[in-house]
Length: 162
Image 1 (tube, helix red, strand yellow):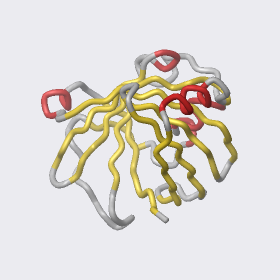
Image 2 (tube, one colour; image 1 turned 90 degrees about the vertical axis):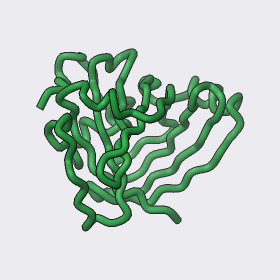
Image 3 (cartoon, helix red, strand yellow; image 1 turned 135 degrees about the horizontal axis):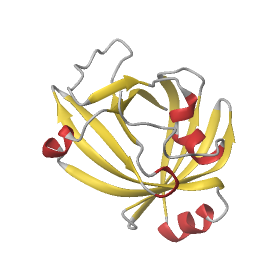
């Protein structure tokens, strides 16, 4: 079983763009959503799909199980998603030995920009790039699960400035 250990932040500027190495278009939705677990479907660049099961309540660490599935199956499952299907572009930005994933949301959440950094341990202390804003680790409102399933969204309610 894999562990997902990550911190999440709002993004205060576009300064990260010059350091981004790759980007992918993601569409994702949730088939099941509970307080301490979720089942997510994600389609990457229309070419690859994954089913992910996450379990746990910790603000930083959860159990995570991921499986590749056929894109056609994923597209069918997204039609049954709870709430909305999230659309975003994920940019990978290396910084001081860590890789930051900067998600620029489209669709219902256009204007929201969130950066996540995955760590090997909760004791890791990645240096924060200058473009990072307020930390929202553990703030359920900023979880993809909540963005897809729980809230009526006003794009101005989620300022990407710190």
